Image (cartoon, rainbow, N blue to C red; front, side, top):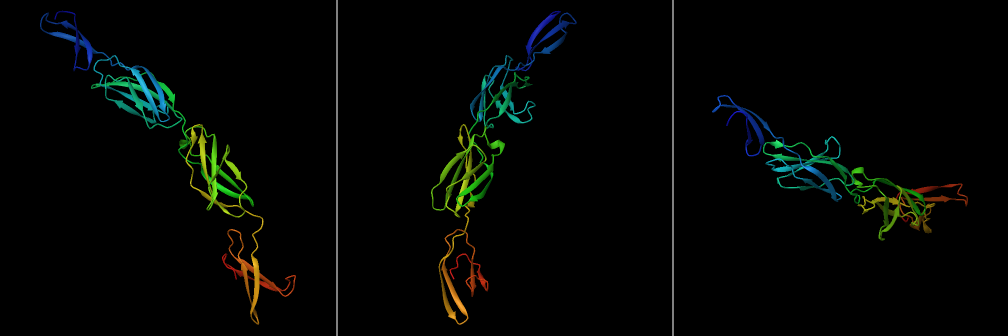
Length: 287
């Protein structure tokens, strides 16, 4: 009351400000010019990696009146176009946790204070990189090729980048044939030759990627057959005349894998210059 009176007020119990008033009549009517005190953001924001997929964020509380909570914003880009935010509904809170993040990824973080009438500006910005982890995806496009009777060459591509979870330091190759236990070997590249195999036998091959944290999952097995120089010859061939113009031929099957049939050759001379052949399109046939 009175000319030049300065009044401090709370507009709705959340906004704090002041008015400077001049009396027009000297007693009853005042003209006041009011200003709301801006909401202050939290300060001293810090971020600490707690697991490969989570970050603990701390701050000093906003000095503004009526703070009801805080919003933690995070992004993998400076423009905050990818990421998200976490709301802490506690005006006295000074920490919050970001979860379900990507491994081995840099995040930029800010914090804002909130109250019923709105929110503050952004706090200081901090950046932190999550830890690496074991790969969450297997290598891709695994291919096998026969090198010689006892070797298979394996080649593959690295896992998708989002599933690497850090620099790939090597690979584990696991292989076996039916009825045998798995054998494992490691390599730093994306090709490897498996040696010492049994000729012309089908093998199952799997590959997994590694980081400094350990080995990731193996991909689906790929089947391949080790090559050999010659298919094993059928044995114990026998010939029996069945009619004046026919002969029955029998044999013990070839020991090689993947036989699709047999060819019976015959001739009236030792050099097979006259005669012919009969094809049996059955790999299991013995006559």
